[in-house]
Length: 119
Image 1 (cartoon, rainbow, N blue to C red):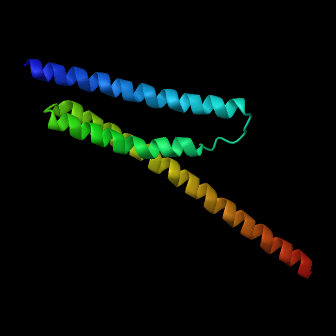
Image 2: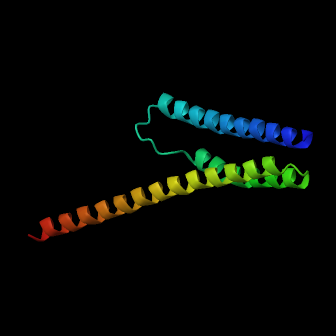
Image 3: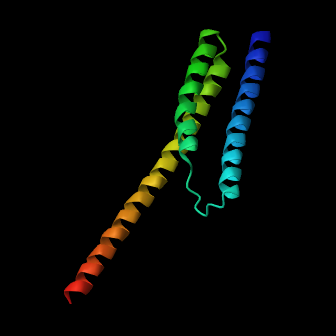
């Protein structure tokens, strides 16, 4: 019974710590962006790097907990890795959509300029 209690306690504590670190980093990046008075809300390259490396780190830590027979903690780390990976994929999907929209707008403007020059 005691190993399960320890496992659940460690899982809750580590997950809470992971969430606090990621939220703190996200907040710090937001404050830096606000202080520099950038009006766009586009994430920085450092944020993409953190969101890319974090799932690998969570999975590695989860594997270590699995090897230590802390199954609940290992599962919580894998779930955290999946959640951060999902946030990364959603963010990258949004950035790709913005990139495609900007390209389409540039293409439309070029077509209009050519049409105005020819008439």
